[in-house]
Image 1 (cartoon, rainbow, N blue to C red):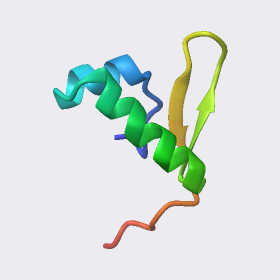
Image 2: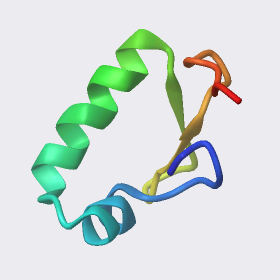
Image 3: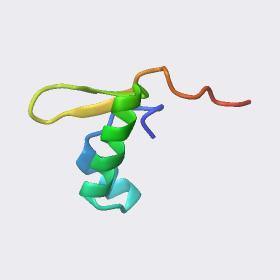
Length: 57
């Protein structure tokens, strides 16, 4: 989802039907790997950093 557009953690949780804490756990893991980055202040938006796996096809 983050490859297409930035999302807040709350919106990701709502869209994926996962809990907010599960979404945050995975966002933090992906951030530590450099796959995604966080932008903004107070209400953060998460987006792809471009360093993740390239799409096939």
